[in-house]
Length: 286
Ligand SMILES: Nc1ncnc2c1ncn2[C@@H]1O[C@H](COP(=O)(O)OP(=O)(O)OP(=O)(O)O)[C@@H](O)[C@H]1O
Ligand SMILES: [Mg+2]
Image 1 (cartoon, rainbow, N blue to C red):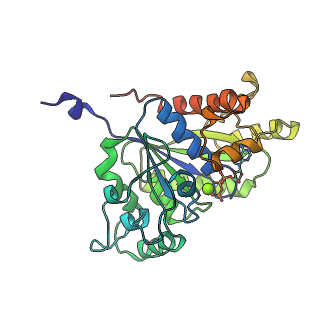
Image 2 (cartoon, rainbow, N blue to C red):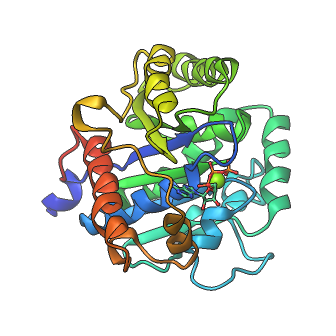
């Protein structure tokens, strides 16, 4: 009997959430994928954003618009559905696989089809991922800046082991927006996915201003169950700095650890390395 195969656990799923655009969800997912890969974890990135920014950054070369995509794996019609194994592609980084978006329309259209389906609207992604859960240690889901049905699917993607990771800037958010985000996640917890938990709040584009420092306490108040990953105790070392070079490197397909800029190679790479430790806590490798 192959003990290793039988002992194998299913992947932990982490969904990046925040309905405000441009806060660093995609950048975080890409950097987290890289950091996880460097730790030897088997990683799948699911691009659930019709904008396809994650796909653009990670895919090897350009994917044709008529190429199968994650939208095909989510199709509620059995006859039109494509197995996720046919959708997943290799990326610019060995050890990171990708379920890509290949056209803006396809994912938007499939969201409408899912909404119109009679049953299982919240579980299309869960079903799609089922066959590959044992193939990965970590599945990272990038989401659009929205609280719609695709996000609900992302949050209900795992039956047993899923975390919602809030990505946000410390100084630019609306109280109402945070309340809506929290309600959405709690709604999924209550109705669709009891094992969904908060991972924490990853602070991005950090400049270290007094205003930002003060606002961390407000953020913590809005998410009593989710730790803010930035604290005065360690000089805010886990807040991702606002450095333009981060953007340049991601656009060039360069990992933080590979950067010629020592601040990225040391400081930023270490932030994501520790983030993976937090995300994988309690789930030792099988
Ligand atoms: N720490 C950072 N320092 C500098 N620029 C950054 C940083 N993080 C992200 N950016 C840049 O800010 C822009 C928005 O980031 P990103 O695409 O990751 O946000 P997002 O939350 O995924 O946006 P959307 O909601 O539209 O999907 C991008 O141009 C990105 O390169
Ligand atoms: Mg994005």
